[in-house]
Image (cartoon, rainbow, N blue to C red; front, side, top):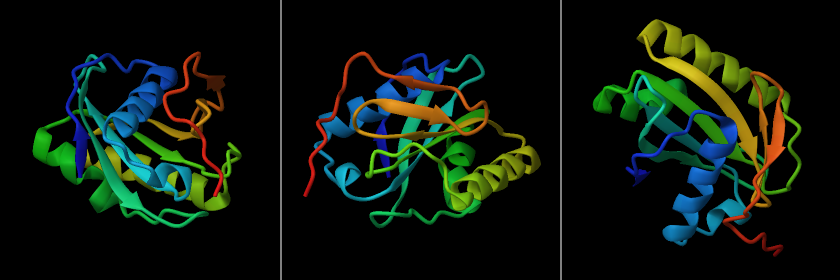
Length: 150
């Protein structure tokens, strides 16, 4: 499900995470506080976002996705690059083995499809994020979603 088509530069992980949180807030999507969600962000060659979609909504501790679902919108839209993001409702940015395995599968699928997977990012609703490819971490200056504990 496409949730944003804003044309905005997402040339670093912080901007990509900020755009996901902005889109979730503007659409009043609360599942991000209690369930893992997988997002795909297609960009043009200059890293300007073409679309942001929710690929899957999982449970409190996992979001199962397959590469076909993750790349579907990129193929339809003709997006040459893609960024994958998923939240950890627990707030913990450590990647599980399943997270790392999925990132590798998505990168391999992108090579076959000719769509460059720029990054796989884990984030939380406090605005903290971690790139699974580079290992770089950061925190947004402005938090777009207030963390709610149920």
